[in-house]
Length: 422
Ligand SMILES: C[S@@+](CC[C@H](N)C(=O)[O-])C[C@H]1O[C@@H](n2cnc3c(N)ncnc32)[C@H](O)[C@@H]1O
Image 1 (cartoon, rainbow, N blue to C red):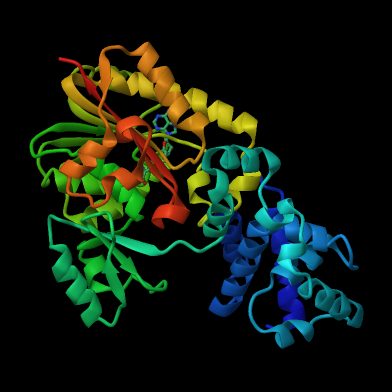
Image 2: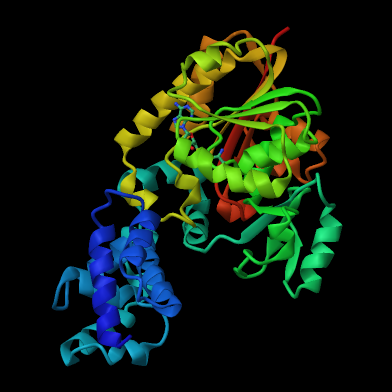
């Protein structure tokens, strides 16, 4: 495609994305569906431009105040990846001069908000939690996430898969914390990789693997994954149960549960029962009350721990959406708790960085549910042979799992664990 046409295409897509009425990945995917003639390199340029602008939105909007032409075009120029001469051939002389001026701006001279590129409410909430580590956290949120795999213990051992992947020419290493994880270098395509096609591995962030591990589901048990979605954690739990017992995968989104089906087929699991529920008080849940050994609540949340993958979330979430999520998280946790047998285990998890969706939800749950006692996560991880468990946890005696991208190179995750008193 001619550079001029490609830049126009970028501007049009950015305008769509900046309505923020749908997740960016969905807007980009729709644009590609509606413009089938776009080749792989053009698609990569479009998507890289959009994500670069979402990451550095405040800085780019500030730079774009000068210059001429539409705002979307100016943003597209600032976010455009790759060859500068290629881009320059699409620019007017005035745009070239403006762009040179923008490139000469030194990040160190920018105002704080143009360096961290976060809305004020979020910057304050994060600063309050991580203090001096704020700049390191911001930098890590702007790095692309690594591609992590989880080995399916039903099929293979990690060392065997590592050797096979290396044989296939992939650079990879064991993940530092999850005993089942493999971190790939770069972003190789997996769709034709035998280990992936045969279900020996699944894509799963190392942090997400640790959450599933915390449930510690055993052979023959009755287990519920209350917010299973497309089943990232369901698959890990089903394998931990050695394909025995019964694992219910609940979710209010039938569409997401549908995406679990091909993954289940690859995994070789037959102990998983996907159930689309209407809401957290659905009658099908009531029928299982008091019958379940372990329940994972991987709650719907702001997703602010996944900004490395979805930078649009920092612009789509607000204090109001976070408060609404916290209310829903409470309601789901309350309902899920009814499922447990005496001595059963309840795990609450989110991929949010915010206290309001994590510690605050747990503290409210503990007050309302004296029939549950908290189990410190650090000791559980030690027992599961997770290295450096204490460094993955926060609170007194390592009571909560608290993963941070800048400290642990995972997405941001939180988890708490309770035992139902006998
Ligand atoms: C964090 S995602 C789950 C991710 C999934 N566990 C995984 O590992 O891939 C949260 C899920 O909660 C679901 N959800 C939202 N409201 C719910 C409710 N009231 N009851 C159960 N699930 C709900 C959403 O559809 C979404 O799939």
